[in-house]
Image (cartoon, rainbow, N blue to C red; front, side):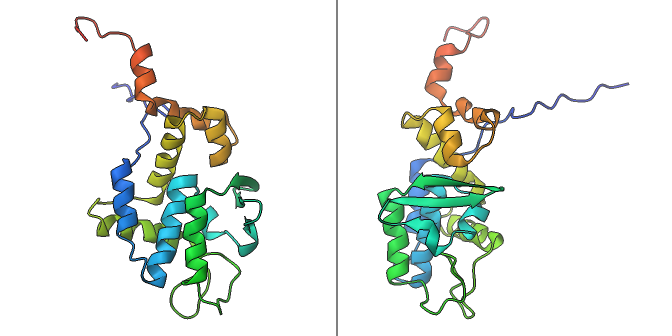
Length: 199
């Protein structure tokens, strides 16, 4: 009659990348090639806006509103209009200018580099991250880690949990609340001293 081990929902810490690790991912993309420009744009979108792989795969040419400086993200039965950061826009524009095949068969933003130039699926977007991580010597990293990285960066820059949840497309604040544990400086101020410790 051994009781089961307690398993608390959302008890873990989101795994994020440090800024130098994100830079290593970027630096590994050969932006002198069409594939390198495409992969750099994908990594920039994932790490800056925290998009899901399905949202990146589903982006269409019409979803980028250049004049308004916005991007429309569709996923999980809803859509979200987000500001298009300058660095993200520049990365996508570089891919459009010299990288994306003119005769692509799809209206999606990201297409395969080989013929037929069809839309990249979720697994292909995820593979871009995995290959970039291996190239950068960072071990196994999945695309969701970049989502955690983006959320943590937004909090560090002063965004509140509601704003982070809006960018990430969360329907419930409880889902976003896990990122509150990433703010270590605030946690230090509210954490109780461990009995017998001097710190």
